[in-house]
Amino acid sequence: MTSGSVLKAPAFRSVARRLVAALGALLALAALALIWAARLSLPHDLYVSELGADGMPTAGAFRLALLLLVAGGALVALACRGIRSRARVLRRWTPTVSLLVSCAFFLLASQVPCTAGCPVPAPGSPLFTWQDFTHTSAAVIAFGAAAVAMLQCGFALGHPVLAVLSRASAIAVAGIAAIGGLMSVLSFYSWMGSRFEFTATTIGLAWVAVLGLSVALARQRVSAPRDVAGEADTARPADPAGVADSAAAQQLEQPIG
Image 1 (cartoon, rainbow, N blue to C red):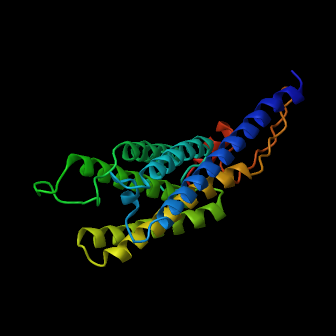
Image 2: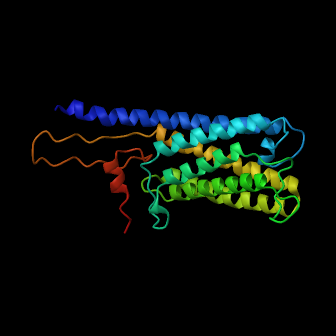
């Protein structure tokens, strides 16, 4: 087998992974644009989920945006499966798993919209419905899983720029979304809480797009194979976007220190 034929398979996988990552990033950006277009079409402040509530004129656009996010997030998750976290707690599973969990619950939220006004009453309240409970729970879990993926990428080995952006995004999304959610539950300046939630949503979707683009634009360097038995292999450097073959990904999994 010639060296050229050995190098063709990794090169093809690299190109395919970059295309998948780029498509995922574009779908995430399309979802973000659709959500903001729906929001700007309404004259009053409201929470993100209210865009898809029963009877809202933006319900169809919101459901489409969530489906685009699910598709884009899943593609990005598959493309970034080489990324590993160096933090012991966060490296028990990969960011790919966290992103896929997030996408699964966003899919559930898209199929079970909240009722008009999207109330979040406690169980036992006369306003409580299982529909609202299912939608709200799915959305919270989806955002939580996405925040975990951000933290995992925030401590990824060999990805300094992505790590900084991911840590900042995780802190911003968790903090802003938590404040906005509490303001909604307590009915305290709800209009401001809704703006906080839209900000957190924007950061989260933008991060998915940035992750996909970082994979799509990364350079992959493949070491030359051995032609003579016993000849030492050329060391393979770490892939800056986590898209290297499984052998390189296993090397990145070794903890520091």
